[in-house]
Length: 428
Ligand code: RNT
Ligand code: ZN
Image: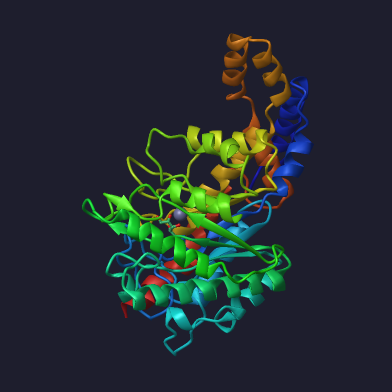
């Protein structure tokens, strides 16, 4: 049990310390509470999806590693897991759904046949929980993606298939946004690319442009659907060229009034994704974030409270852009408790946002403008050890979710009571 008095005392103390810096902790918590992190459904089952009973991630430049027990075996179990995750997080979250997680029952529905009927049970689930949904076409783990190209394929039939799939996801996403009363971000990522140095880059990019033009010809209200485009530097098996690169999508988005998804694992390791926020927001209405942790490369490790994540949060907050940035997670670690993976990552992002919201940015800006760069540096260093953890603990307390290490034992209990049982029954 959390020691309420200890947490409240620590908070009171923290509140005073921040007040001395001219920062209002209550105001910061109010802003944090308004942020809805979009939880990626695919951490729950290693990007398997439920199109076939034995669905698993295959091909497509992404790979989940690990074989930790307790994976959900159907949508009911996956929903239960996500609800568990949400019960361990303060604030309200959304769910970011991949098309491969439709409610397909027994009949096999191919990707070019999906309709809102296959996702209505998700919308009903979200309605019951009072949360929003985001959506993604699934252009990988499919025989027609095996050639390495989908929307940019030179084979007319392949390209047509994927255009139809993505076209349908926009209709579905728009319907989700309409029913749930909150815009649904439909994020397009394709695995298209080439392992070895290609010659005809230009043709594939021209085809991708045409495919997107065709897909986006249909218009939907902004209050229902937000189109997002996710680029990438490279992926497994597409090391030499990725058709949908960052430049490609950024240029497309600027010209066509779309938003761009920054997946923090998709850039050169020396690039700082946080630095891109203030640049892109000059020209785009919004940004989608796929917060990930790449270890040496796009490895999709669980997000932790790193410098990168802190810079990202600081830059969104400093740009006063929380309402323009859709914050989502994107990682899939199958080697540890999957619910724990969600909670650690989501809490790390909340902590980064909170610490950014507790920054006396005005004071720092004044130092910068006065050329007092030593003082700016010292202030930034000192802020790193201010008691934002005490403020976060208090936030958890007021939200009635486990405080601090309290969530670890909750997850262990869930593992013993629920996840462990799944393992036993699936071995039978
Ligand atoms: C892959 C992209 C993409 C996927 C999801 C599952 O590199 O990051 O966002 O992770 O679509
Ligand atoms: Zn991503």
